[in-house]
Length: 334
Ligand code: PMV
Image (cartoon, rainbow, N blue to C red):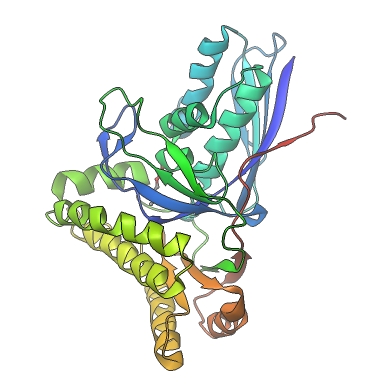
């Protein structure tokens, strides 16, 4: 029996990936930047290979999944690693998320990153961060960033074979210890439009998309500089404008994609009012492919943001994350 268990955490992008230039290899149109979160947004995954299993199996949150459907692409890295290790045994994957699956919480990122790390360990492969990132990318694009902790950039690359499209760490998890991500859950249901489908229609139909790509070229160096200098006001403004740019191109897609809800908009107004009231930018919202808000702030303003969120009727749950360390191996000793 070959076995290994890993945890990995979701990452919340501040320059987001939305659109592939190569669907099969998952090669994006733009570089993206994110912070990997701590264990409040974590997946734990055990991977076992054994001749005792009759077929491949995936268990997600206690439920057996149909590997011929839906999650098939997420487990593609297992096949790539099995070939690399030259081991032809059936696999059993047991994975658990400690946050709502499919609610715009990038559960695919933590899930695929944990899967790639556990699989490569179980098969006794010694792979570099770059190799793990490229494998994770082929399971789910955003997962390429979750193989590292801290502040991470996924390079889009230029080659058509994908060998220069991988993530790298820009700053470690303890670079900005005061940074917080306050999550306002306004919806716990699975999203209606998958990111895979949504991205495709945006790139094919949105007239704004081209403009967004031009805009991001200028934003990326500014965002990196703001994070490295810990310039919160610049960082937060760039974060909010980038999220708005992505959601504008989604709305401009035909048929339109609308992930934001009334609850999301209430959170946006709350953040704007708070920043205006204090006369400085202390909070910046960002939304992925879902209505739940991620508010970046610093330790100092965490409690006032929580208090304001509690007054919003649409907000069902509030969680706070710090920046996390990236994947960790868990002992499989009984
Ligand atoms: O999780 P994926 O690889 O299907 O992509 C989702 C992308 C966003 O979460 C919307 C943005 C990002 O860069 O994380």
